[in-house]
Each structure stands twice: as C-alpha cells, then as structure tokens.
Length: 156
Image (cartoon, rainbow, N blue to C red):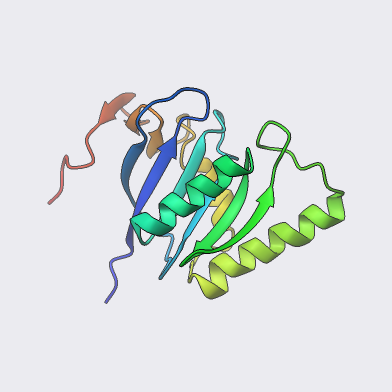
C-alpha cells in the first residue's frame, strides 16, 4: 500500500531566500519530479517529487530556462520553456499545446501521477486564497484560519 505523501517545494523567484518545503498527498507520482514557474498568484517555482535529487533538478531546470514547466526522471529532463516572465512561451500556440500535452502525459504515464492535470493542480498548490492548506515561499498556510502553520501540527 502506498501512502502517496510527497515533498513539495516553493522557491521564491524574486528574492534569494530559503525555499519552503512541506508535504502533499494525492499527486500519485511513483518516481521523478515535476516543477513549474506557473504558480498562481506569485508565479514562484513550485515542485513536487519523489526524491530530493529529482526535485532539485526540476527546480534548477526551471531556473536555467528562466521559467518553464518540467518533468524530471533520473536526470532525464523534459521542459517547456516559458521565456516571457516565466509564464508565457515565445513559441506558436500549437507548439506549446503539443509540448504541454506531452509533459502532462509524461507526468501521468511515466512518472505515475494519478491526476488528470498534474501541472494545473501544481499551479494552484501555492494559491493562498483557496482552501485548505497551501504552500507559499513564506511557509505552509492554512487558508481557513488565515495563519501560517507547521507541517507537523495535528499529525495523528
């Protein structure tokens, strides 16, 4: 039985600060990591993965390309660069759509995500205005109580 608890990381794209790290359930990844600079509303880098090495590689790939959406599996990197503000591609729409679908399919079929839209879900994990608990560059935030919390509170 798998408990599907993975590490999630948010890296501030605008200031040299320590990353925020916590845990997430429900992504279903069996290996590798995914990351993106599309993370509403701040568009910081957000990543989720099975190993620190893959998470770090995914984050560093987004940094190297100055924005993007990426799948990483044991140093195999597949990225859609988003060169304009880290959220917009300079490629034609059809090219972007094809690459996005490819990355979404890799996340599901090769990395094992159980989600229909792993990158869309990832993009909302740092959006502090929708319940329940979200991760910002400043830490884990409980939207219902409007307070930062510890990842280790209420661990029964």
